[in-house]
Image (tube, rainbow over all chains, first blue to last red):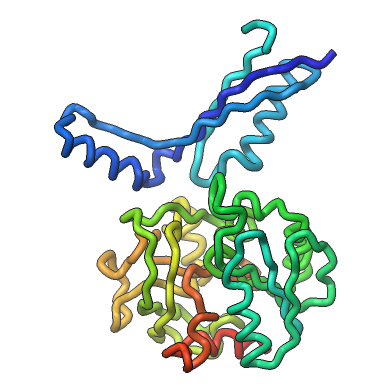
Length: 88
Length: 225
């Protein structure tokens, strides 16, 4: 029986990669007076739904999807959650 | 030599390349729509600059899964030549045909300029028409040309002589001041270990006709004939 899942995927730059956009946003926030902002990293947030035979298979597929396309492992890390639609 | 220029949706330097290979050098040149898979007739494949698939997700990330790319990978495995310029370079790194990645320019600006580039060495079929450490002038036009690779990869590139082009000053100085986009080690262009794949951010095809003001790129194409 196939199951439907909702997933939220987060793609972030690896710590060793300079986040130029994040640096620019941080300096703008400092100009706006928010001196307390210490650290910004900008990433991507992707929502998707998928169907699979089991949660294990859905998890495996999502890893493949992230490794192949959604993230570039050379410069990015990713994480995701996987929630069965029925459970929501 | 028979050239093929891949046309992805959003490529915009494809015609410029054909103008050089066919228009200036009189070589048979075929435009390859990204959905084609039979490219056996071609000697050299060029992936042009532009904004394939609107640069969605990451530059080159979607183009690398175009049907033609499987054939391009086989072309490389056969030892035949592939040149990726600008977006073409980004596609080659995304496809894993070249190491590293191209990220947002350090200053976040889209840079459109004509700048000095140093030919690192002429011990490659791509650069044999230049002098080692010769300084040439090439146009650049990109928002994401900041070359990134981890330290081990950079060392390997250096040790193997895989770095062919670097951003430099007018006298060939390699320093941070003359690094327009923040690239590691001022890298502007690299080859794979085997030497049959070249990726570069500068546009030699836009510097191959004296009508355009400068022709330093011409020697690169002339080498391939």
